[in-house]
Length: 144
Ligand SMILES: C[C@H](OP(=O)(O)OC[C@@H](O)[C@@H](O)[C@@H](O)Cn1c2nc(=O)[nH]c(=O)c-2cc2ccc(O)cc21)C(=O)N[C@@H](CCC(=O)N[C@@H](CCC(=O)O)C(=O)O)C(=O)O
Image (cartoon, rainbow, N blue to C red; front, side, top):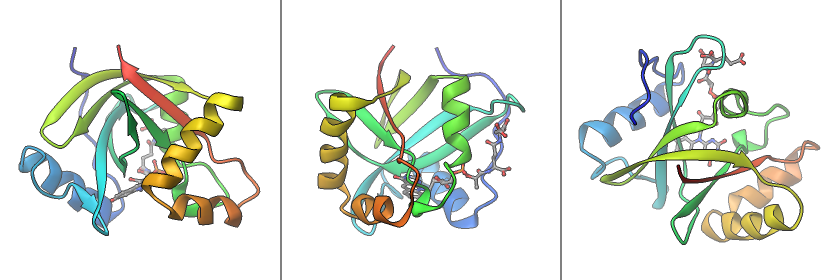
């Protein structure tokens, strides 16, 4: 069931442009960052109810994906983290495919397993975690 709401582009130009290219090409262009695959997550703004679209590195395993709230190792979680906590139903676009999915925060052993997969997919995550005292949250999204 597609999410309803008015799309509000990211204030970050590079992000907005990647979303625009990814979507306008039907998931055939704008699907990487530094040559590594990217997925596009549509979620609902926790306060505005607007649709937000967030490119994230692709970390996939047996049809489930990890969404890593690294925010480049910044001291604060990305805002989309709060959106997902408030409204876990998302649309995930992986290239030309789009699925309705449900996000859940993972902890403990399960988080450790997904963290390993995330760093294998995008090594910079390990650097980002070294840069900040906050534990970088990991969501897992599965088909709802
Ligand atoms: C700048 C801010 O973005 P953010 O949600 O903090 O997310 C920051 C980044 O994580 C986000 O830009 C990611 O797309 C960056 N990014 C990655 N970010 C990551 O955290 N992990 C990744 O793996 C990742 C990969 C990636 C690949 C390509 C690319 O282009 C970007 C990539 C933003 O969009 N703010 C908006 C929206 C704010 C919002 O959602 N407001 C909520 C209210 C939220 C609240 O206050 O509770 C609402 O609408 O109701 C604004 O300030 O107007």
